[in-house]
Image (cartoon, rainbow, N blue to C red; front, side):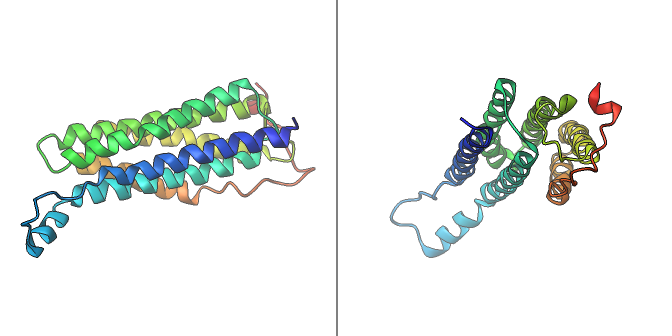
Length: 217
């Protein structure tokens, strides 16, 4: 099997896992059940009271969507794969499929006295997701093991630094959540803007690649 077919197969499988994870999020929004005697006003109020579920769903849908877009961009750098990459990618997919659970916990408790714990649990899951991305990037870019030759070192360093920055920001949001639940979530959400603007589409040109010592050691 050619290298292109191998990477395409792994990416297609990953896309399927992302699709399942993002679909499962909607299952956490339950239809209000108050019997056949429910009035229009009661139903309307019950639907409004589901706002924590709407909030958690939108939060996680956005997160998984951004992760999928970045994962898709990730494959533009890869010339081949190896077993280490596949295990690292599997670890990332494990964390992606886990997301619906902290989403459900957040929806259930964000408006209760357990808001701090639910926020910390959610932000903690983002820390683990970031670790998974860092592991995947390390298996790919260390000594340019799996990176295409035409990819400039400056782009590799840029993405590596972005992933490391993400770890510390998510860790901060996790710690902050124990004291201020909303602040922890806002820190987490604000960093997603950074992921949106992170540019994977600057592959460089052949003949301009500079192999810095930081990437060879």
